[in-house]
Image (cartoon, rainbow, N blue to C red; front, side, top):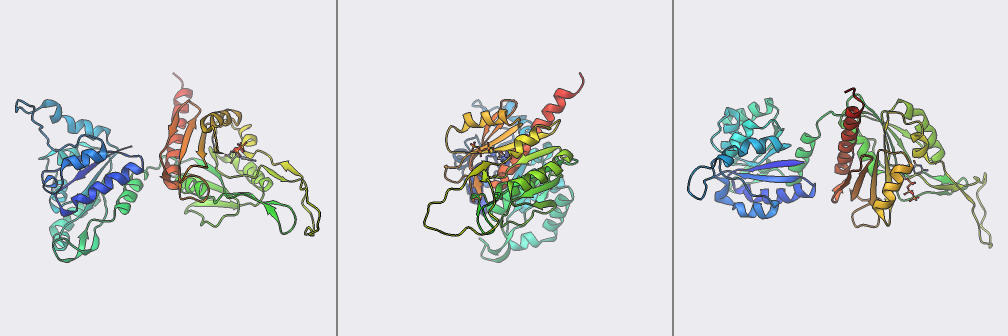
Length: 408
Ligand code: CTP
């Protein structure tokens, strides 16, 4: 996804440099546009080095002969068309006024008019300027137009005063960007089944076999799908996580219970995402009484559990199926094999030995292997961001299938 970051002339302009880094960590491609005022506070070179892209500064860049260059004159249209979101941080009182009135006298203001992408604005200024009726009126106009405003924080300001006017925290700005981008309801009308967490396979009334799954990845997927408009059934093993808003949760303990719940909900679903770490084996029999300790070694016989994903996939019809694979070696090779053998459409593979990936982390490093041959290796991302990328891929695969199925 491409973000255009507009930097305007305020003391907080230097904070935009850190913002570039954070956005890139979330795998966004960042194109920086600076106003003349911003260049008084920080050089374009800083942003060019951080973003790895040429920074746009002028509406009419001059050629070496001093003439206005036609290419640069129409560049704002090209940037406007390829950007997925316009973020302005910090936004001065001046830029808010120009956006509100539709003034187009430099690259950024022209871009604002030319783009149909969503716009997020993070103002930063002196407290009196922020509270001034003129600024507040402009904010109302922009809000009413659908612009997302990330309100400034209160605190000590560069001008020596205290109050509202400090640029909001970078994490808060990035969260607003994500929320705005994914506010799309592209899963409206879909019913999504998600399995999550570990299963527990009982040995006797007090002991069981389980694994280290926290359920975080599956819960993030369920939450993201609900936000994107889907009806979501979350079939969950025992975890200590809150049920995400708008999600219908069904608690299970064992692989067998999970299989029954899936069998019940799968027929009514259009998308099924199997994120659970189902125990592959269970004791052949559950002892009715607690096993007593004695001096002899104990052998426990295990039998395989049903492969819930593979069984559901047998009656998959038009449903789109997503599987997960936790690997410790030959990730791509194993993932492609699993994608085919399980009759899935998308396989989310992670190398659980990598730093920042796998069990109980808030981040994950995954590659998405799709049925149509696409491999998408994602950098280290928060699990909620990974969830969004998985759903982006699901939406893409559904659209592809609809094109293929539609009559010519
Ligand atoms: N899965 C399932 N039922 C099982 C086992 C796994 O539904 N009994 C699902 C998981 O939710 C996941 C995928 O299948 O989506 C993982 O497949 P699997 O082949 O079990 O992966 P690994 O456990 O990683 O396999 P292996 O140990 O053979 O590498």
